[in-house]
Image 1 (cartoon, helix red, strand yellow):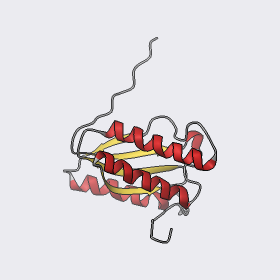
Image 2 (cartoon, rainbow, N blue to C red; image 1 turned 120 degrees about the vertical axis):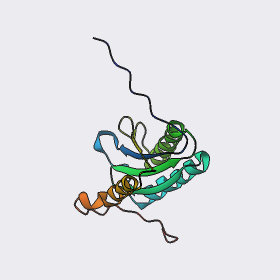
Image 3 (cartoon, one colour; image 1 turned 60 degrees about the vertical axis):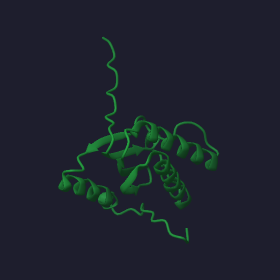
Length: 145
């Protein structure tokens, strides 16, 4: 019995995606607000490099959700850079090595022209912490932190 190749990522200019990634073996990917700040700064750099627009996000202790629009067909390259750069920064800060994220990130195409669906995905992302039993997982960067 042969192995099937993984499905190719769908990429096209103007696409919107619900992106999710979890920590390897269920481990945390954010130990504190400094890690969350580092991820958001890294995400900002990814947006500068790729032209991405972030419409919604939530950072949980062991995973994240993003609602991202890609003006160019560059999801794969951007996610490779984002997760690779954050992993290197996280590992350097915590004196670790190896994988931070579990397998492939999940990317679901969101039909941005269908307003109700776009809003449903955004609401799903923002309500994720409430579904996780209200654990303190949110991080809203300010000038103070």
